[in-house]
Image (cartoon, rainbow, N blue to C red; front, top):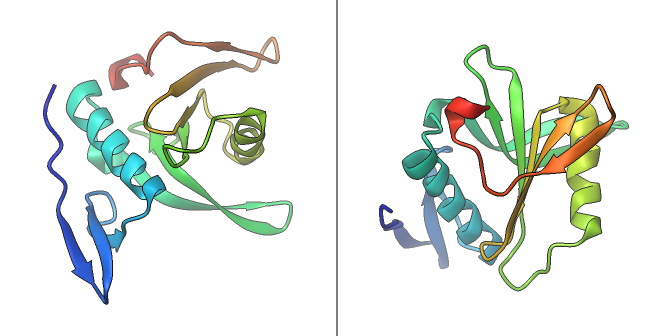
Length: 144
């Protein structure tokens, strides 16, 4: 496993962390710490192409603007995975899954992932049977 060594600095009096997907420093919150570590894991350990991932992806849902924490795309730029992050002290609950499921009403991805940095849940959608299956681990990019 490659060790994640984040770039952290103070910007306008706030601690900030460099986001390799957005190519800029962002406010270092507990949720952002989880995001940057998870993105690093996906790229370095699971083979996810950095160029096919986006953070804070804006969608329109029922006339309101929402943001998906991270979206992973295939080479045709079709969304394949939505990832929702919570701070490490936040338990992953049904409410978290309800949130990511609402986002999926717009994007229709094959995989939904939720992580608080301590626990990760990944489920594969089956639209034919209108069901989903929890996976043992996060799939490699080539398995999407």
